[in-house]
Image: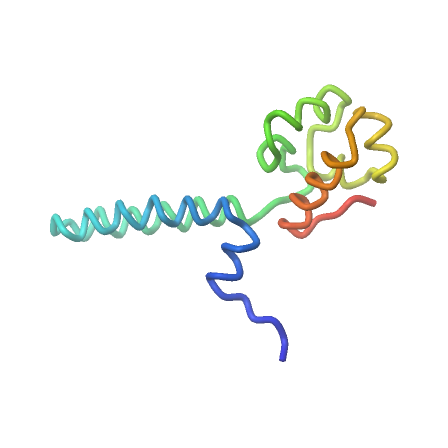
Length: 120
């Protein structure tokens, strides 16, 4: 049986999506309780827009939009600004160019993998 994508499996792979979903669920609930179905629908639409933004990561996506602020500084200072630039590198070349440790490298690889990307 093939792996099926379910809301739980997606949120497990992308915990940042859970926060967006939870925040907007609260806004929808409040709007419904107040009888404002248009605001409820707008909140749902906004949530789906944010989730779609988070879901789609292109080679041109800025690396600082998907990776931890503290860790991304070394990538930026070494001239790696996009997901595509980072993924064009080997683990060894990133360690050398960015002066990052293996733990940071593993974290970066896991973050990239969560969006379907990997290093060369």
